[in-house]
Image (cartoon, rainbow, N blue to C red; front, side, top):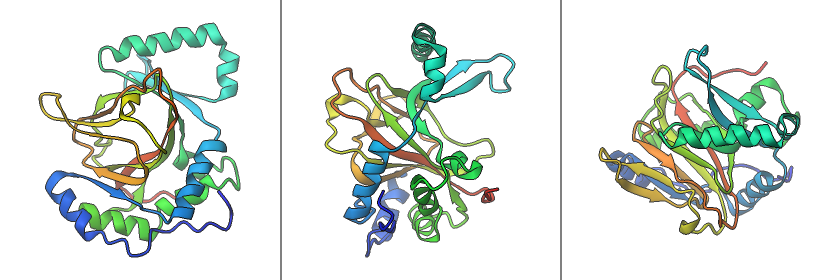
Length: 254
């Protein structure tokens, strides 16, 4: 992302019509959030300069939640070796059959920012923008929650075979007031999978949202949702920033 690109909301963006939709549906898609130059810069940043980690869970009986989250760099994966990684991924797929799991590439933006990873990298400017007064105030206005204090965030890259099984997002202390996905995916096709799916009480798909470029989806995270598996013939990468608008005290780096 070029250093002279300013990250701002698109001039004239009015939250009011989107707030009406969210109040009615608990789901809203907001196109053209950033000016074109900024959106293009974020796309290029995600496409070409992120040190992605592979994210997936594994059972861990001694862990309070009964599982651990693996966050593996390219070096970690090389050290583990192809055969052992294949076995571990097979385990992920077997557990996903019973609606348990996820597999995708990610960059934990908040953790990276707080711990000083990749000093000077432009991804940190994006983290700051998502927690700027302008973005948070826009989010507050859309979802009608004045107490929002921060936006959690991770960059994600889904490629062939990646998925996220159905779940809800409340947080440990119900601090997650709404979930969001901020799309930077170009020319994605519905046949490629990777759709954000909102499910009803019968697990029928109420809405299936294509990953779109420069589009912010905000939805009630207590609605059951999933990301459908990316097809073996998908012709691109699904690039998103995902996270939650939260009302717990804002963290401070250092």
